[in-house]
Length: 395
Image (tube, rainbow, N blue to C red; front, side, top):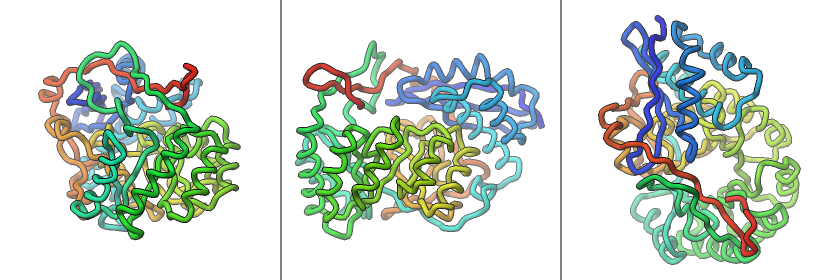
């Protein structure tokens, strides 16, 4: 079996996505997700211009060899653009392997150790009152056992729903000192609304300094967070160590990591309780299974990144990893916009606080190219934050 064609599919059914489709001379093909919010076109160009020619004529089952070929063969180590491109290809190759074997991906990864996956959903809204009401509804009506909040009002504003070409990012105001009090008050009110038995995740989204994060986390200790997500930015590794030493609140980290080597200090120092890399950002399934094995060695659980702007393909891959990993912790459920399901079939289904998925060969998803073409790609940016004095702040 040889690879004969590599396609990139840019589409925007309310959200920009970049899919990869690899075709073989056997008639079997695989699909993958290479989406990088705000830089999809650049990733597509890298695949089309540099990586696709390297795949033509190769054996699609040599997944590890090709991963190393891309990661090391260019000499320059990969950043987010390279690793996202590598992920789309890596997923598609694993999909081909599963289809040719007639087995779901989780079987190739060692088989199931669980049948369903504990998940959490984002509580979004325009005001604090709206989000408090929605949190209570999620627990009462949807049966969620864990919910996720995010610092800032309104949470994730401008991240989703791409409706046309953008010439620059949306600018959001952010005053960290003022938001410390809003953050603490918001969490406490949510805890009062949902009760003690519901897990509450709080995403600080790297928007606070180490001292500010510690102040927040110490105040919240008595309200029992499930974990605090990304309390600080990853650039200075000692900042994470500092926060870990100052509070006993569980920490989840890793959304911006690009490889297992970036994860190492947090894992070996046990500065985190959950490792939550984005599968796309670390180069796909091949790297994810290695990160998970490293984390298991240090009694750290996985909580793969999976927000609302991630496609059903990546959510499916997350699910396959989750059911086959011993040290699984929890999964971000990524309640995608319904329009994407006109383009992508398959993916996990939510029920009573858990994700389940039908067993199909490979990843279990497919991309309808004709439907994808009906939703043309629009250039878009992630938002940025500026403080009162006009200076840029981490979004």
